[in-house]
Length: 543
Image (cartoon, rainbow, N blue to C red):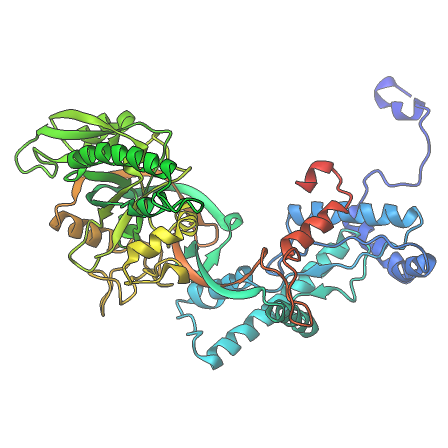
């Protein structure tokens, strides 16, 4: 035999095996699964572990709305490794898979496949018959994908109780959820309230932070004047300082001394007030449509502010000669240049004690916005961008909402009976992205709209900007490209709006069967106690 014709692999001393050169997994894996089924592997594992200590893995369920992807595979395989290893260690480690069959992901798929793709109108879900029919479509859709995903997960070789999974759409599961909610109602911790949330006008639903993507977006930006109107009186201090000494019945000397100090500080305050009483605090916002919802202005004690007067400006300019603006010193130059002011002077510094007592008018006062706008201290205010003041609309932002909660007394006083802040933030925009009928100027029978059903910008910004211009309350406007929240499903921008919701109070004492409530027995305290007796792996998970 010549060297050219020789098979040199025959000269190698390699181990012999019956395994094929290629794994042939597409053919081999179904054979393995069929063998496990023939052996009744799952039932035999359960029988072998009967009576042993249990190891329970609570399976976070996937949505039943499409084929599985690599994330599903990784998730299920890792869980299979955990449960099988615990079974081998002697535990009764029964894996019960589950599916989430409720919520927006499935509804969105139904709308996409059965309505939007066919240019059909989505059913009017305020009609009970249409709502029931739509729910049946969702249930059938979820059941279909549950079966598909079950086959795909089994194909991965995951061993579990696939014949008896748990699903959120099981009627007994839904009934149990209703029973648990009623427990909260019975112990007094369930209540109706409202709070601003991220809202998709396209999908007609609130969205969680996990359902949000941030994309480039071009917004209108405006610089708006809030005229200084009044100041917070401190007469109540005088009543306290003139309390009589209980032993002598005479005016308390310390009180008199305190009064003299107060009288001196008030004299200084009135001198400062005389210089700012014709000025305006300027705010900057990229959401002009939220101006109707404004109820306060926020500042920070960490920022230095000043009173600036316009000395030169072009003819016809929005910011005119003689105008006085209160601005953060660090941002004043940028604001005045943006307002096309060609000459200005700083009259004086404006301290936090003065700011905290100022009361402004709403820029649309005289046209239905007759309430006061208090100036309040808040930690989220910075001088990185804007004016150093933050326009605060409690129905359109999380930080704005908490400012209202923290300063309810000031909000109630400023409202002057036009609304009741104790009942929640102002309601200005509905679930269709339109102003409510009661909103002055922009509501009525043909309300302006913030976002359309297709996710495009409505006419609300233009309407608000025009109203501010007509009221001579705008000093500048522009456009800004920035990162803005979008729904990860519709890929359309969302808005912050106040919505009625059900809440479970974490700090309200829980009423027992006898109707009595112990002050320390709250859901928060119960949760903290349970966390404290739980072993966390890794430990930092406890935080």
